[in-house]
Image (tube, rainbow, N blue to C red; front, side, top):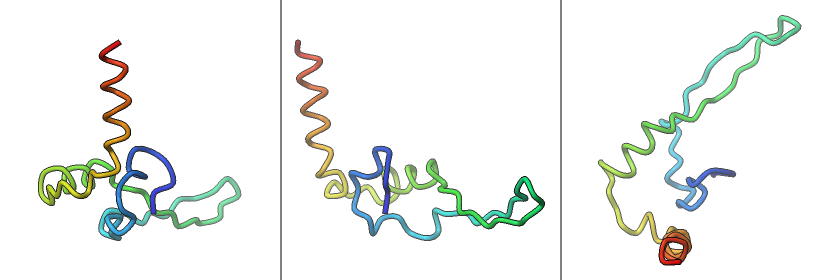
Amino acid sequence: MFKRGIENLLAPELAETRFYETKEITGDYGETKTIQEFKKMEFCDWVCRERHHPDDFQDFSVVVEIIETFLSS
């Protein structure tokens, strides 16, 4: 589930695990931390070019309306 960014307008089930890369980092006190990093560009390419389902973008209509209103004024 996306909590921020324009991705939060997409259905949560699109956030497949393959778009998260697990990394280990060393903290300030030498501790090892495991984090997941979102591969945003890979996800974008998949949603927009490969998957290409118009229904995925149904919640974007509000954003498009705002942009159209802004551009027409």
